[in-house]
Length: 252
Image (cartoon, rainbow, N blue to C red; front, side):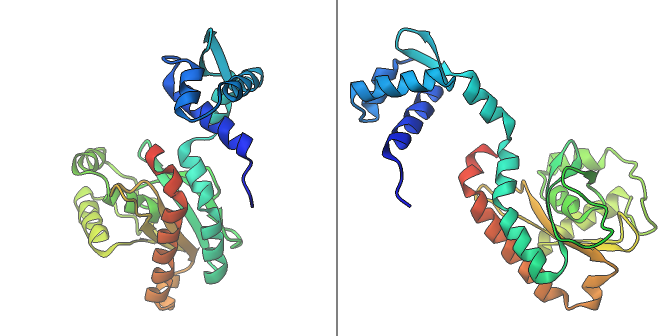
């Protein structure tokens, strides 16, 4: 589809003026962008009327209340997760399992995306679970910087949610080492009896692991199925999800 030139110019001016913080005049910024003086004036007037810019003195503007309201309504992490939603929906459809995407927040895992319709699965978007026993949580903890991981493990004791939950800090540290080496984590009925999942990191160019994705299902399904093909699909989806998140990388 063709782009709208006037809108492109307006957005470019809005972004540049907002970043500048009223240090330079809008006309100077417009000139730098290659805009005619009359065009810059019309665009600045329109953006100010809409509340996207706010005039602080003649010719100088800062971000307006409408822009701040829009930018504060959705975090970069939420926007990036939503960009990856179609990838998880496709993964869930192809595997017949439930796909999740999550991140660490205050040492808990926040589940941002859930795709799949398995009956009775308790997870939902926005739910928080303990990180040490969930697949996504273990992946994210395994990829924390060493000092941060040590601080987390020092926050023991960890509560056993099922008979299979690993609660010993040394055992968890060894598990994290294995996860980093092998590239995936397993929640073997450690959060809820009868629920198993595989999880992998979503790679980033920076090397930091901000998100992880998982496939969850009732029973010990990774043992009943051939694990490798399912894991391969999960890892392929993680690469695809990372690509969809690329526009947000600098903000994460």
